[in-house]
Length: 251
Length: 355
Image 1: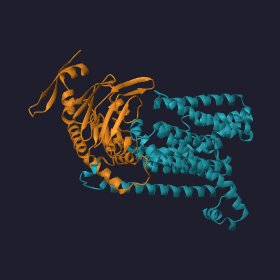
Image 2: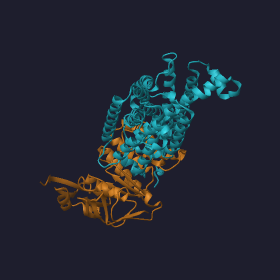
Image 3: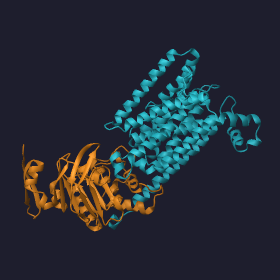
Image 4: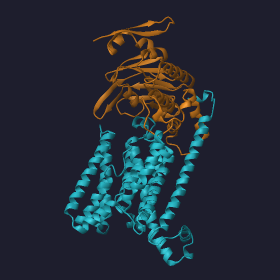
């Protein structure tokens, strides 16, 4: 099972440091890790740095991987809406990068499986420009999954989805991670989703890591007050699950 | 990781995709046949009209036809007909890849100022006798045009790679280049003698009558160099249309891909313009017609763009010979008249798949 650890990881754009000192223990495959923090904290930058799309100090350590650094797949927030491509074509091209023109039956059947698993097979031959933001996010997830990554970095994959789809996608990703041994890092704004679906959580604020560990230990009233500037509590609901209850913002 | 573990309920997607790909291949083959037909008609028309049978006999059994027919077809009309094909294909392909890498439907050699730069370069030679590359004075006009066009293309490229430069900025830069070079051209025309002025005006209208076999070979060679290069990066170029972040996330070196593509596009745009003058419409509309017919998967879009441009200019060449009997009108003038109605029909019947 793949393992990912970050050692003093930072990121720079030109001479400007935008992220620094992210250290984690080994994040084992098979579970989801939430990356949380306020807007512009550096979550996307951290993902780009891990995926090798941004430069900076520190080391991204991969262990027990079958494919090396190329097995890390970064999934941006959106996929282009202007391209005159069908959903099916856009997923196909994600799987074919660096390969020949010839498309094998097995590749097409894999796309069919993924679209069915995400319940978007009815959109397969719709143009990307005809989709809603939420539908495009589901296509983006399909484009990431078809590449068969061992480490998947999902940048706010549920931000445009309705509640039903959010629950469905996060549940699906958790089952998939458990079954395949994939390590999923997922940037989230909804902390209840982090509490419900993610075993570990990394908190990023103002370009630095401020906490990391088991989700239940990291998401606390103190952290919410210090990082998110809200007065909030983490309590157990009637089903025995932790939920964040926000009382008010701190001005 | 295996999503494959999920049960596959239907293979409808695969079947529909295969059918779609087959339809596109048929469409591209149809365009190829239409192009061959158009080239034959183009060669049959002229001051002395020949039948299609005479043209085909002269092409495939040259020794069995008379000297006059053979000379007219092989030495006079075929270079012009093939120049229409290579120039149309080159400009359309250049436009297609400019639109792809700049993510802009308005990008083309004409709208980004490359043609205007070439026009200014040619005018420098025609009016002032200025050779930008003095070592080859006998080819002063095409070399001037080529060097100015390359300079404009590279300027656009390097501007597009600067931080904070948006797609809209690139189009505005292109428009600024068009106005700048047109103003400089007007200034040269104002200072020019009557004879030089006539030469410049004729050059900027674009004309295939300047075609010779060496020019056909050079334009064709650049095309044959560019097509495999783009074909090799077909998946990456298609992915670029999903956005820069998405393409990078798929493992594509976006900066390098853009640079290589823009260098090749500069050659594709500059060489035809330096040989036949300004032909504006093909580079913009050829790719749009191709996109509406086959979408943006470069495995289909690439050949379709090439064929659309070639067909558009070849058909225009036919029209330019038939509008006024006995006269060959400048092709740059006729291109839009042939292309616009067809383009309108496609836009209004196929709106969902336009850019």
